[in-house]
Length: 264
Image (tube, rainbow, N blue to C red):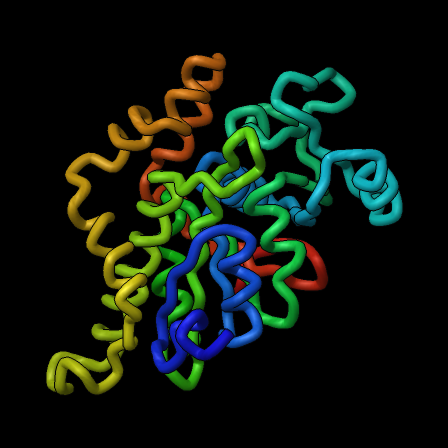
């Protein structure tokens, strides 16, 4: 495949799911993973509390061994929480759980993407920390064609395993892209030409930012979209509420030595 699938020449790029992440990862300096319901929201809650979060592809026996080798606790499924295993992908449950310094947090979407991102810097973004992430990227010089960033909306899965584009991840990705664009424009200074240091957004990234800007009530959209309704009807409305805490978190989780920890 040619350069077209990598959105080459653009400083800020946008793609969907594991396949999109794989295509962009080899050609960008930083990969931003967005999985609003719920991996990256859970990461923001855990890292904010001081936990180092290790992404992992699978929640199976191999995850048990991986966590044991790290001396970490292993997150279980939302409905598998017990007194001895209180950590889960649920952001609300993580807030109630006892503090753990190291947590393996598997998921088939955001966590799997982060765990297989290769040599790029990897950041976890959600609606809770989108502005903080965008401003950090701008401050680090990401978003220029010479130092491109790829923003990945993780999406969900249809029953047959194929990608289901998810509105919540589109909105989260758009929020990060808008904050990065605005952050670099501000860094250029009021007297600088508008194009001098602004990131070169691909059409895909421009459309994601526009989708976020066009959504008058992001919190309401989150609760009413397919993924939000699935969680609400399954008894996890509190997770949707946590995910809708727009810009409540200033922490930027950066993958460092295999774990998400606060970026400096």
